[in-house]
Image: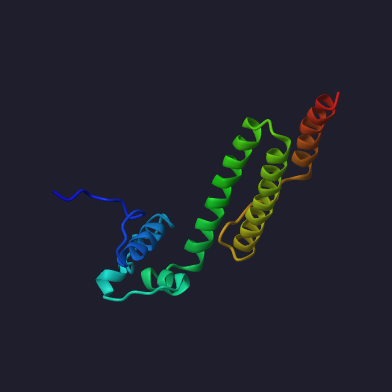
Length: 145
């Protein structure tokens, strides 16, 4: 009786297509939108990741950048947890570098959305900013002691 093997251990040529399909299945919370079909449903195969992704779904700019923003937020949390759980200085430095880069990318995604009206925010009153600076500025001084 044949045993079922996972996609990663299958040696057939279609394994790479299944892996790509699995990769894109969870790529967006909107991936199951009305225009999405698998490559097998369209009867086409592609080795080019970009072409494959475009063929899979026609996502809007907002759907794509929202997914990017959400992914960066999740990665920042994971990097933060890893940083707190690691005692090796070289590894901590590496994680910290990736955390900083990811935070910059997250802010770029937010800025892109905000400038295009996809993620509107309200301007905080000056009194709230002063209050926050006093509240959190005190913590920084306390932590440095």
